[in-house]
Image (tube, rainbow, N blue to C red; front, side, top):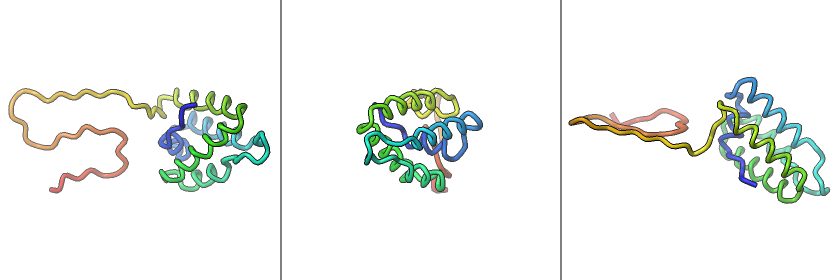
Amino acid sequence: MDPIAPELLMALASGTAGAAGQQIWFALRNLVGRRPDPEGTPDGEGELVALGEAAHSVDRARELAEALAERARQDPAFARALETWRREAEALPELRTGTGEVRNEISGGTFQGAVVQARDINGPLSFGR
């Protein structure tokens, strides 16, 4: 199973994906809330709650992703359901976190100034001026 991107989990927990994102987040909560099989398998509930309380925490998102992956390794039924959930979440346009491709071209003479090619900037940019 492919790992779940922490950025995807953060977007869902923070509510930035609107109503569709809320539905996907609730579906994950319901999935995690099911009793683990076999008994003693980590459930990920604590990590899910922690991310819900600090939705912009990359560390908490990574911890949840790791807990989900561990549970999936130990519980094949959970792994299948989680994979279905992940595909549905990644299909929402508001939640796209794939690598994608960007091509920028600057031409036509002299250029003075900064050029930035970036993705998923979380915070201000500064060019030291």
